[in-house]
Length: 156
Image (cartoon, rainbow, N blue to C red):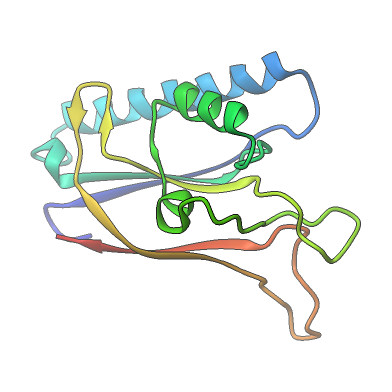
């Protein structure tokens, strides 16, 4: 972000098929990777304070945001990051996944922001807005079976 403040931006694609246990194991691996990486960044003095490090995790988690039980489990396994899209839209549902049709029916995609990693307080970023965008190629065809998730943040 600048000489003293850094942004750790991670992206992932969680396995679509497989058992629930396998997917949950992947989520635990992601959480452990983030925790380990943040600690290494801080121990290396790459940033002089956790308050100068922001952490964002984004991607396709293949877990429906509008199934309360799945959403709560996903957040718990990842260390309770903020779901920026849900934070902005509240209970209004907006979908990102369209399977074998042109009508999106689920939201599997997330932009998560970590305010803390365990007991480490990180840089606070403020959400301005979040929405879904259908990215199209020069032939006006969608480039994916997922719509893109977009968030605008401010840094203080």
